[in-house]
Amino acid sequence: MSGRERASDALDIGRDRPHVEAMLPLSVLDLSFVRSGHPPSAALHETIALAKTCDAAGYRRYWLAEHHNLPSVASPAPEIMIGQVAAATSRIRVGSGGVMLPNHSPLMVAERFRVLEGLFPDRIDLGVGRAPGTDGVTAYALRRHQEGREGDDFLEKLQELILWETGGFPEGHPFRRVSAMPTDVKLPPIWLLGSSGYSARLAAQVGMGFAFAHHFATHPVDDAMLTYKEAFQPSVWMDKPWSILAVAAVIGETAEEAERLASSQDLNRLKRDRGEFGPIPSPEEAAAYPYTEFERQTIRRNRDRLFVGTPDEVAKTLVAFADSARADELMITSAIYDQPARHRSYELLMEAVRRVSVTA
Image 1 (cartoon, one colour):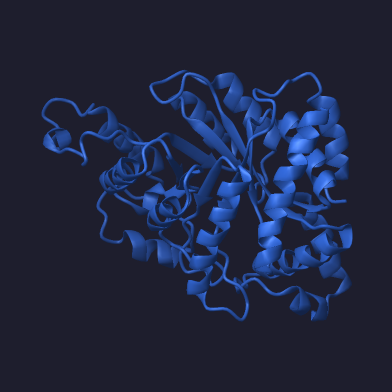
Image 2 (cartoon, one colour):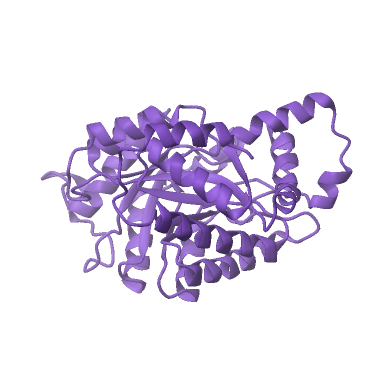
């Protein structure tokens, strides 16, 4: 099974660290994947349907991503989808995974998320990221009317977002008389998203939650998580560190079914690595694809970032992996083509993690 070696190492590394909770919290990262043969708008409705399933299953959070000009991702506007998902569910927290802050005015982000928090109190999360979520030309189209310095302005915009919440603009600053509306609502919890040590250090320094994207990161997860935990400074946002480990997983009733479902993601990743960002192919398309031996080797290497197998196998591996990384929560993303199977995959994982938690 994918990740078996990691599971063995993780059990040894994390044996002495008890979980904060009896059961490791599970959450969902949904990119509103577009499926081959289906219109992109269908993915938006599929997101809402999956959120209802995960709400009923007991998942803690449901986060929506921001990507632009990607044929495989239907939603470029997480704040709109957050409102729709929150309205269709009753318990689960809903948030952004994330808002790509360099694309936006911090005031606009503050106001939109205050509106969401006002409509759905204590159920909204604001995850912010540093990357543009797209290619260079599209990033320019998104930002060309923004004024300011050239280069990476993420830290500057994060500081401004914080000031809109704290009211900390100094005397004489032009923004001091501007209020982020509605003024009687606070921003929801802010999370920094990342795939590097930089994001981990920054999250620790400002005392915010940290979510690490293992499913595409090249930076060692243990290093990022340990950096965050050891350097964390209590703040008005959080008094204790809380880390989320985002992973890609595919669960099937049997090992054979899991492999069949994962073949869509294998082929999609293979094509994406060579610049082909098409919709998620079906398992039938993946089975008919004429793989070369080199491509098969590439798929095997890519499985280092994809957990595939039966419910109990994947659950044991992921719980151990979270232990090794000192993660407080797991966030699952799953690009399964067949929608009933995708819903069932999330249900099976939750049931299995509950079993693993009882026997641990």
